[in-house]
Length: 132
Ligand code: AMP
Ligand code: ZN
Image (cartoon, rainbow, N blue to C red; front, side, top):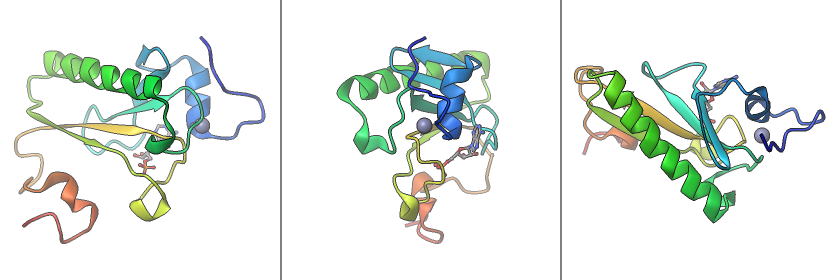
């Protein structure tokens, strides 16, 4: 696999790209399970190349990431009929909540009743602003 990882790179996600133990691959991108999943099946999609955020991705990386999102969504729905929705999210920048500075797209499966009131979803990035 063509990987940008080098021995001097300390990024934990570059190490994932180099490990070959990921879940799926599409051209310039891979996907693997989130180590601290929000729900069962929570995946992260990343470019193989170290890029700090979504706005640094090339057109090809965005196309491959989107194809992976669709493939993995189909795969999850086929394997787990309890999944009835998804959140897709990207934190861009420290002030937006990003903690790992290698671009990653969260694909979070959702199930009926997995929280008391799902209304507003990703609006919950600001606590208290989810409902409207
Ligand atoms: P963010 O806050 O958007 O930067 O998300 C970083 C995500 O990376 C979190 O959901 C973590 O659970 C996840 N994470 C942290 N370390 C690892 C790791 N070694 N392998 C997989 N996922 C990780
Ligand atoms: Zn990296």
